[in-house]
Image: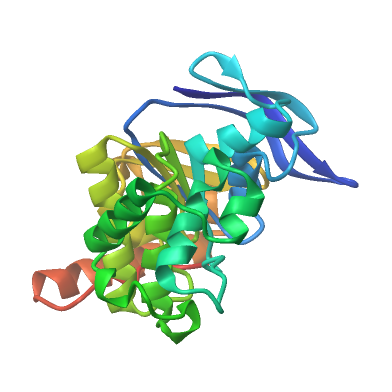
Length: 273
C-alpha cells in the first residue's frame, strides 16, 4: 500500500503539489488526469523520489520512503519503476542491453557499463521483450525503433527491475493511436496478470476511462476527484478541467467517441487539454 499524507512540493511561490492525501492499494490500475501544469508529473516524481517533497509523508507498506538515501533509494526506485514519455533509452546500445540496464539496482555501475550480466538476467530480459512483442528486435540499436517500439522496450526495462509498482508519466503522449493502444494494453496486462500496481498519468480522458478502474483528477496541485470512471459526471469534469466551456467540450468529445465506438470506429485518441 502506498500512502501520501499532506504531501507538498514548492517551487518558489508556486505549489506544484499542494497537500495531497492519497492511498493506493496493491494491485490497482490508476489513471491520473488533469490539465498541463495540474501537478500530475510532479506527483509521480515525488513518489519515485526524483524530487523531494517540501512537506508531508510518503510511505510504502508502512515504511517511510520520503527520506531514504543511497542504496536504499536505489532499491526503492527498482521497486517503484518509472516509465517516461521520452522513453529514456540509450540510443547507441542494442535493445537487450537497454533492458538489462534495468538491473542496475541489483549490481554495480561498472558491471552494467561493461555489460557483465548473468545468464539468468539475460534470460529475464529476453522473456520481458518476448512478452512485449519485441524479442525479434533484441539486437537492434534502440534508435532504429519506432516510438511505440521504444516505449515497449522501456516497459520491458521496468519489468526486469522486478517492481511492485510501475509509474508511467504520460507514456503515450507522443505515440500514434495504434502504438498507444499497444502500450496501454501492455500496462493493463502487467497490472492484471502480475498484480503490479500501475499509476499512469494520462493526457487523454477517454484513455483513462477505458483502461483504468480508478481515476484521480488533479487541478492546481490538488486532488479534486478520486473514484471509478463511471463517477466522472459533468460536474466532476468541470472541477478537473476548469471552465464550463472547456468541460463541455470534453464531454461532447467523449459522447462523439462513444458514438464512433458503437459504430465500430476506433476511439482510442480521447480528449486532451
